Image 1: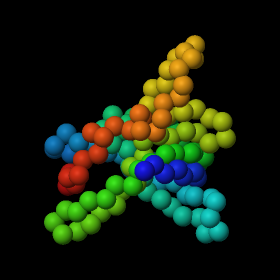
Image 2: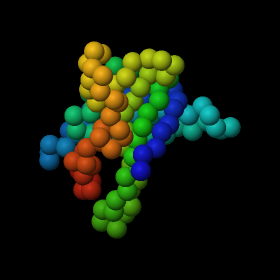
Image 3: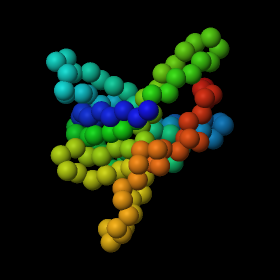
Image 4: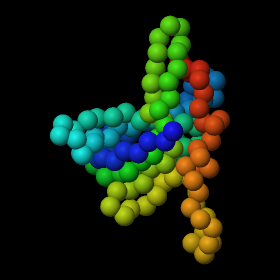
Length: 125
């Protein structure tokens, strides 16, 4: 199942690379549609880490993500794994590469954009 969120970027961390070769990058957005705004931490993994390079703190964004949960040594973890991010209010898209402007192919579905191998059930730390 896929979820959507929108808000303003509060923080963008550097990419973390682990000895296993796994890499991830975390960022925080502040939601604005709630009575009490919330700071939500998301992550992007593997080859999607670079998609945050196009964005800045303070920029409004819309994103799509999956909720990933796992257990490691008796502790349970939940990650909000972002797989598409767009600038808010008609800005640029930083999701997976799109078809060229001259192409008449339809926009890919959410399941086509997500890669199952982007998600490792093992915590890399």
